[in-house]
Image (cartoon, rainbow, N blue to C red):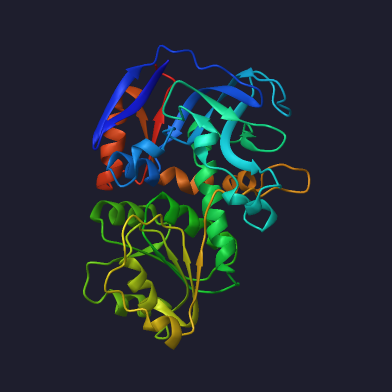
Length: 346
């Protein structure tokens, strides 16, 4: 088995992993076809998260079920699957108190993760992390199921109303996916804002949403020209930089809502928090993935992704496994909004 491993801060290595990955009860083995690079993966590589506390690497993957452990139901050998939280235990404190998305750590769910030719995945009656992938979604697009699930949580937490204006701060894949979901959920004018020149150019060329360069001194005036002088109804904060919350405070109208999906790795020093009271702002966190299911226990997310997948093709860059280092480097630089590594030519 080959896998991509982090040796140290900023240092990746392609390894031949000789130890057999054994399937335990309530788990399945998946032959990985593709895996997307998430912002949390970049944080691990950049040393913003402690490697000692993470037992997996890569969690946005598609593949084929090759082995099934005792106690697994709903899956068969040869099925195409994708990673997505679809069922939680319902018994732990978090589940019983309305936060099933906090049921388990992925350390308990994946090994060694999606950046490997094969991985073990928990898929028991009490916790399922795989969805069956329909033929209408290919292996590359299927890697966006998990981030779309997370973005869907953001949209639901934003309580978007028809016609409301939205500012999406941070034009990584999560920000773009959220913007397209918001449009489908009835949002009016949606504006994206970023500092990265490559990302801004890519999104502008895609025609998905209008964009503002945060480096412009008059960025707030530009926003008001798009959405009105009172500010936007909803702000989605997707940068990962604590200081961006200050921009959200400025952009939101009186009574506005700010939905935060960012995983912050620092403190917001010198942040002026007075607008929370002055504007009566509502600030909500949005932690994905979340077990959104239809009444027939199938994935809500896959249906939503099918509606926007043609648009999302514009932000994906595909890399062979041998080019994994470049996939990460391009993601860090903003050259690629969504890097997806393919394992098919290994």
